[in-house]
Image 1 (cartoon, rainbow, N blue to C red):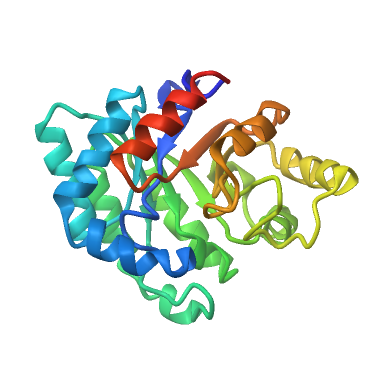
Image 2 (image 1 turned 90 degrees about the vertical axis):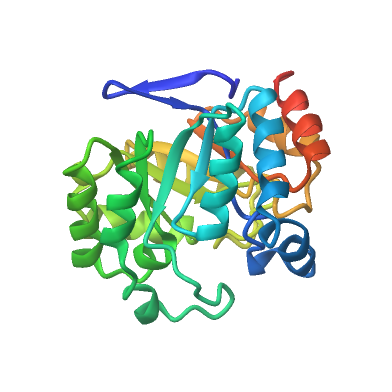
Length: 264
């Protein structure tokens, strides 16, 4: 289901993307963030080991942003023959996820990120959620324009799949981007949807598909609340998600999760 490639506008993008959240100890991972910082972020070799195992299990794309430790880990993995397509997040900053200051987020050197990832095998660049969800449409459009001047396709990331999806058509030129990354899981965790019964899922599906974009789902395990099998069973019934991003924190997790994913 997700071990094929998506071919779009002459670009080949693997449907399964290795996420970076555990690698950089994202704060929304709760108490595990401290462990991930010690075991992964402060030890690029450990990150590289997970990347290599994911590659060995058939994963051919990785989500990266401009962070020295993360890029060092990827370089180590590449030295071991692990060359993936890079899905780049543009304009990511160290903003408090639980209480974000969107004005600070907008001050990022996003143009440096575009220049950096233009030198990678990078078929797709995505504007970071803290820029998109600031709803400064002029800035978002400017960044998309600059991405579109490169050889990469462009897209958006949001932390608010309902609110942002409602706002995009009225505020943004829809021809500026082709991909849209949203948090999406069976229990609507870290989504701006309080419940997710059948009727609400159908309503959300209609809103999402009306954008006519390629959809990338993130946080499919609901930050560890859902077991991989539960998440994959849910996605087996979903026909409007084009790609998924999966974060794993250990070599063993990479082996187990991606082996299981191959069964779907």
